[in-house]
Length: 121
Image (cartoon, rainbow, N blue to C red; front, side, top):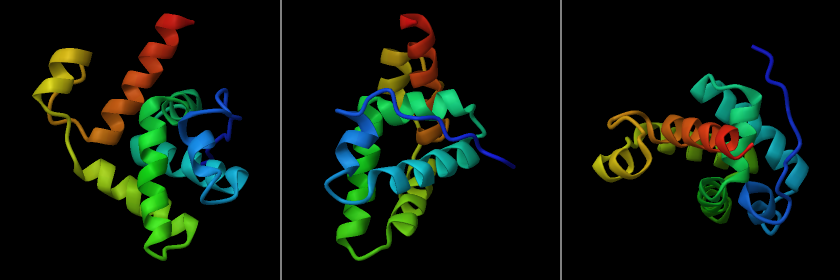
């Protein structure tokens, strides 16, 4: 499966803005776009919208924690993806954002970011 790597639309915040203190931004962005796309089966636009969102910043924090623990950036991204895919959406996110409960956490927030991007145009 070929994953199209789209550039960030949010260089100041989100994943791109947060990961720059911990890794080469271009390398980390490419690896994260691929990993999120493969794990969720989402479109490249949805992966970018997620990574550019506040949840993308939190995802970058999780990746940075892996890097601090000694993982290479690719392994840190893979570990974060695995962790986020094993968590599930709870009652609060379902109620506040309309994300179906028990959906994998990463999938839910990727879908949510894509919908918000479509709504705000």
